[in-house]
Amino acid sequence: MERTFVIIKPDAVQRGKIGKIIQRFEDKGLKIVALKMLTISKEQAERQYSCHKGKPFYPTLVSFMTSGPAVALCIEAKNAISIVRKMLGATDPINSEPGTIRGDFSVDTKHNLVHASDSKESVELEEAIYFPKSEIQGYHFSLNEWFYSEKP
Ligand code: CMP
Image (cartoon, rainbow, N blue to C red; front, side):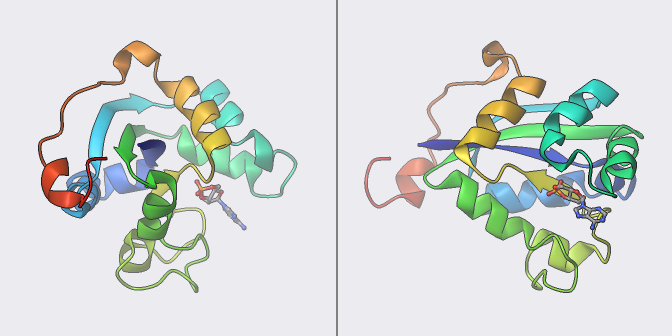
C-alpha cells in the first residue's frame, strides 16, 4: 500500500468545499489514515514549497497558504500518489479536465483548492511537516475487500 499527502487549501475551506473534496476520496475507495484542520505556519508553507523558492509566485503562494485554516490528510491506497494527483486535475485551469476537483471547482492557478504530493519523496517530506507518525492511523479498512480484487 502506498500513502500520499493532501492539503485542502484555505480557498476550499472558505468556499465550503471540505466535505465535497473528502467525499470524492471516500467514494473512490481511498482509505483516510490522518486528518486535521490547521492554520499553516509560514515555516511549514516554506518547507512544503521549498522546490518553488525563487519562482515569481512563491511569496504569494506562501501568504495564500497561511491566510486561514486548511485541512491536511494522509490517504492510503494502492497507487495512492498517482490516483490522487489524477483526481485533483492539472494545476493550470486551462488543462484541468471536468470531472477532476480543480476542473470542476477552480479557474485559477493559485486558488486551486487542493494540493497533493507528486512523488514518494515529496510524501515523505510533506507528511513529516504536518503529521508526527503517531497521528497516522493503522486500521483495518473493511471496504478494501470490496474495492480490490486481490488482498492489498
Ligand atoms: P500545488 O499543487 O499546491 O503546488 C504548487 C502550487 O503553486 C500550485 O498548486 C499552485 O497553487 C501554485 N502555482 C503554481 N504555478 C503557479 C503560477 N504560475 N502562478 C501562481 N501560483 C502557481
